[in-house]
Image (tube, rainbow, N blue to C red; front, side):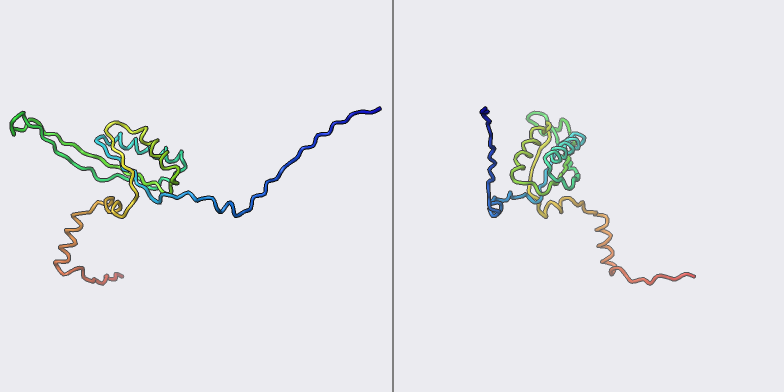
Amino acid sequence: MYSAQTQTHHQTSIIYEPEYLDHLSPEIPLYDQVNVYLKGYDYPVLESYQKYVHKVAASLDIDSGEGWALPPQKLEITRTEPNSSIVDATYHLNIYKRNLQVVDIPSTVMPIFIEAIQAGLPEGVDLEVQVHTELHDEERHVPDLELKELEIKLEELGGPRDVKPIKRK
């Protein structure tokens, strides 16, 4: 008796790619440090939005470094009566500023990050994305005017003097 046997052959193919091809693929450039500046009139809204930006950065695997508040800018706005210089009302406004610094963002992820945070931008909040510079560090630190005045007075009096500590027994 003759029985027909069917045989199936599976061919596996191995593709050989030389290792130097991996080195030819372009590296994705990174943004070193980027500041996300938020500016608005309502501090709780601004702080809540900063949390949102931080969560978006975390969901895109972006390392959010530091976040800080900047000193508020105080404005006094006067409204005058029509066709006169008589002051009708005076308004005092504060412009609050927050900053979130993100580091090492791939250039392919940056547009997605910006679109995502723009999509959730609340009313009355301004958004700026800037590359970090030394000027931003100077803006961050608030000068202590009273301390500077005391240092000037000390220099006028002849500077600090060396005082030996008294040893007590």
